[in-house]
Image 1: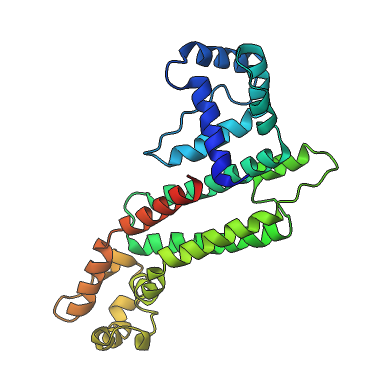
Image 2: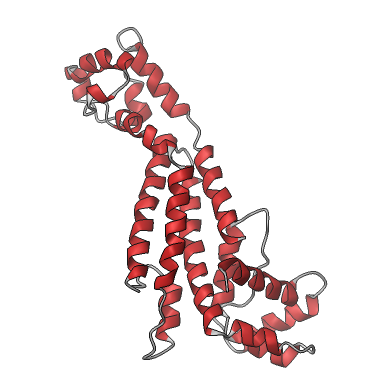
Length: 275
């Protein structure tokens, strides 16, 4: 079963239980989960517009995955035997656990990218940090080490002495790595600019644009600026427009650059990956 099929099946079951005009069945589900003291008291509808809801839907579904077949047996009059068997199959549960963990990792990335008052240097740092995490995730899965995948770890713990092999999911992580390398390749071209923006006093002059190099020579020899603790936009505001016109313009440009490209790229890929 492919990851897209798993997600579609989860959405199908959620819609069966609380979508459309199923108000009575939805109430029964909430009462049932409350009565048996389930980990979660309800399922969440999936919103196609807001992809972040995918992670929340999967998280809730995974939390009550054992209770759903019991609810079918007690409250759903139609024959759900085949559906029950499918969502209790080892392969479905394995895929569900991995998908839930990965959506949560990607949700964390997206929320970080949407933080307030961030400039492009912040975005580049967040994306590059996540790319390093992906390599760690891949190596961990190759060795079937699940410390970064709590749902997978929980599923394996429930099998007692039986080991579930999650190593085949490392290929999915490789897909994400390759996609990130493609979608965010511009971060490499911005690397020297970001370093200059965050640490102009320590930047390597020869690596910067020619029109900035002479001003950088003066800046890095400026005893007044060497004593300052400001960073980023606050530092560039200190620069004299007469003495450092190009560097001030550079600082203004970096400060005003929007991070929306990064957010759009991350969101677009996550939709492709899961839907």
